[in-house]
Amino acid sequence: MSRPVLVLNGPNLGRLGRRQPEIYGTTTHAELAQRCVAWGAALGLAVEVRQTNHEGEMLDWLNDAADTGTPVVLNAAAWTHYSYAIYDACAQLTAPLIEVHLSEPLQRPEVFRHTSVVTPHAAQVIAGHGVDGYRQALEALAALTGESGSSGTDR
Ligand code: DQA
Image 1 (spheres, rainbow, N blue to C red):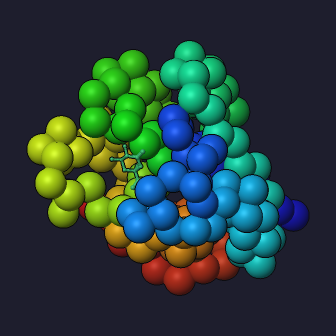
Image 2 (cartoon, helix red, strand yellow):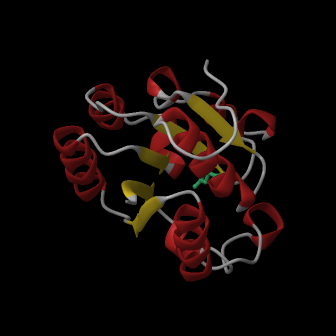
C-alpha cells in the first residue's frame, strides 16, 4: 500500500522553467510534479505535489501534515531564509521532513541565502542537485519511513 507524502513548494517555484533557468533549470513545475509522482510510485509512496505563493496556505498545509503524520519534502524557497512562521510550523511536524533546494543556497553570493529556518527541523538537506534533488529526497523519505529505498543520511 502506498504511503502518502507531500512535496510542498514555496514562492516563485510555480515559474520553474521560465524563472532564471541558468540557476533553476528548464523543467517546469508541472513536469517536476509528474516526475515526483512517478518517482514516489516506484518507491511505494503516494506523492502529492503542491505549490503556493501564499505563506498562510503553506502554513495550513504544514499544520495539516503535522496533524496527519504525513512526511514532507519542503522547498520553502525564499521563506527558507527568514520565515519564523515556517520555522514554527516545521517544528510541529511529526513525520520526517526533507529540505530541498534546486540550487545550493550556501554557494550563492547573497548572504541572506546562507540561513535556513527549515534545516534545524530537517532529517536531511538536499541542495544543488536540481530536479533530481526531489528524487533523492523521496528516496531518503522512503528509507526513513521504513520501506524501499536506499540509506538515509541523518544529520
Ligand atoms: C531555492 C533557493 C532559494 O534561495 C530561493 O529563494 C528560491 C529557490 C532553490 O530551490 O534553489 O526561491 O529554494
